[in-house]
Amino acid sequence: MRGFLMIKVLVSTMVLGCNNLSTAEKDTASDNEVETEGYHAITTGGYHSCALQGDGTIDCWGRDNYGQSTVPEGQYSAVSANYWHTCALDLEGYPQCWGDNEFSQTDIINEEFVSIDAGYWHTCALKPNGSTICWGLEDAGRTTPPEENFTALSSGWYHTCGLQDDGTPLCWGMNSEGQSDAPAGPFEQLSCGGLHCCALTGEGTADCWGENEDGQSNPPNVQFKTISAGASHTCGIGIDDSTRCWGSNAQGQSSVPTVNLTHIASGLDHSCGIDTTGQAICWGLDNHGQSTPPID
Picture 1: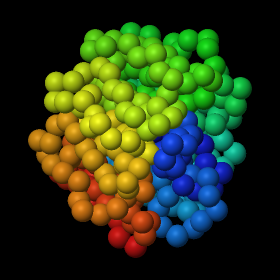
Picture 2 (picture 1 turned 60 degrees about the vertical axis):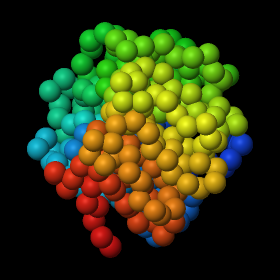
Picture 3 (picture 1 turned 90 degrees about the vertical axis):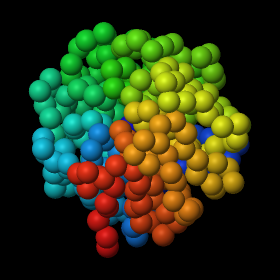
């Protein structure tokens, strides 16, 4: 469900070279290479998905009952979807959000950010100076971030975690399943899903915490380039370029197709990726078209 850093023009920061991982957050799709063909970043929400084109436009597909799949016109550098809303940063770093606004989670904040991440009924964003602001539903402290500076953020359903300069994670918000009790780290990449989070060390080793009812917090003992935590499953792309998912597979969301992927995003009951040609591929539940991306 959710994350990445701001892009200048393309390629998700979640796609990282082996043993040289860059800091990134889950499910915020972003891009920083000058390319224009195909998709370069992808993000998944509850019943919808969105992907960033090389020209800065965003495509969303799936459920649109709150307008979460109706993208405002413009060019963007990053996009993050969660359950009922979607947020993006324009090319200047200013946020634009759409979808459900019951708790003001899609209100416009007239400030410049370097990354943004949508949670369930809340949104958090990272300023250029490393400070964080969050808005939306204020229960369990989810919109009250600590004063520390961060290099990356990732929001789950009711909590958010950030990576500090030294790679130490710090979380705030609900902690019903230990999702805000992060291990010491250090980490270089972070992704929070429903009630759990996963992070990667500099060597690509995955460490997960929080809810584990379906095994979503039991990563395989391999090295990863990128990782994405969903509601009750997690997916990652290994340094061998193979994609693995673990946790719940009740809707086929962990049954990865036999194709090489460069980007990965785990949602509620579905997953999406981008293949080496820039096409979006999704699998799992498709009751609202969330696993049927547009075809060029």
